[in-house]
Structures are given as structure tokens and as C-alpha cells.
Image (cartoon, rainbow, N blue to C red; front, side, top):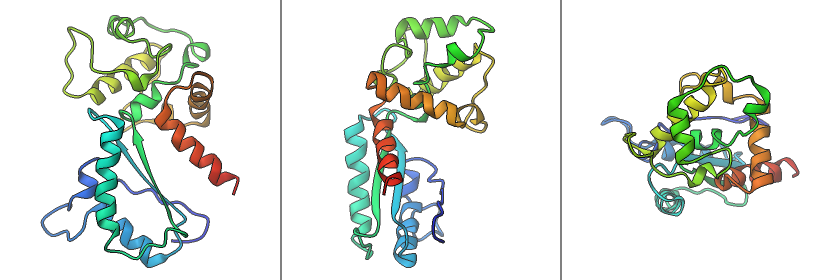
Amino acid sequence: MTINTCRIIAGNGYPSMVSRQNNNSEVSRLEACLIDIERFGNVNHFFICIDSEDHSYTARFHELKSKLDDLKSGYNIDSSKTEIHIIIQHCCFETWALGNAEIPNEYPLLRSSKILSDFQAYYDVLVNDPEEMSCCPTGRTFSTKARFHKHYLQEYLGQFGLFYSKKNPKVVEDKKYLDALKKRCESMNHLSSLKLLLDIWDRIETL
């Protein structure tokens, strides 16, 4: 770990990040990170980001915090040097991405979608907070709420010729997309779990 750098480590979702990776692994990915923080001693901010999925924000937060506190007790991590942030994506990353209400103003409409029309009639994410959207509408079946949110995002972007997948998330990676999400947080007080992350970044930037 060097000065003025960041490091991104895939946790492979929850509960994988707090579980041993295989029979030969002695520690989980989260514990491995704590080992590095203790060993290097120069990590100022450690972000743990997971989806709430079908759980409430509060339930997922406290579940992870409990596991984190148990793991931390075995290591000498100076809280005055390292600030640990638990970020719950409520319910998932795609939920946040649905908050970009600027897309219709920036791209021409290329096709209509009956599926999207059904989704919007059920819950219009351009008007309502995407984080408050629950399970899918009657007649549609998804195994999890997160899968529904991902499909909604794909249909929403697809009508403007934009493609999104977990393996190819390029369309949501640029600064313009993030700026649109910031605007949604500030102007409509939506996406509160994302707003928490943005506020932390702003605070770090001004230090």
C-alpha cells in the first residue's frame, strides 16, 4: 500500500465476503483486508460496500457491523488512523443507477418497451425514489428484488440504445452519470444510501 492510492477488492457479495473462500482458506476476504490494514498501518479509509438485497437497510447494516466488530476484536486497528465505512447499496447498485433521471433529456428514444411500460406503471423510478421500490409487478417473476431492479435498469437504458450488464457496466461509469445521481440526491432527497457515500467522499475531499 502506497501513499495517495486506492485499492478495490472484490468481496464477491454477501455472505461470501465474510466467509472463508474454500476449505484451504484460513480467513474471509473481509478479514484479509483487516490483516492488511493492521500490517501496513497507512489506510485512512476502508469502505465495505454490499447490497441490502431483500433485507431492510437497517437489518443488513447491523448484520454486517456485528460480523465486522467480531473480526476487528482480533486485530489492532487504530480507529484514529483508519475510519471504516459500511455502505449499504439499498437494494443494489442497479437501484442507484435507476436514479439517473437525465437520460431522457440526453438521448433520443429509439424504441418502446412493453416491459418497461409495465414496470413504470407499477413504479415510476423517474418520479419516485428507486430505493423504495419493492418486488416486481403482478405477472412478472424474479427470484430476488435485485434481479428485478437490474432488469428494470436494462429496459430503461435499452430504449435509448444504451446497454448495461454486470460484466459490461461502462454506460454507468462516467462522471456525467454520477453527476446525474448526485443531482437526484440533492434535488429530490432520493437515494439516501448513495447520498451517505457521496457525503463521505465530499468530507474526505475537503480534508
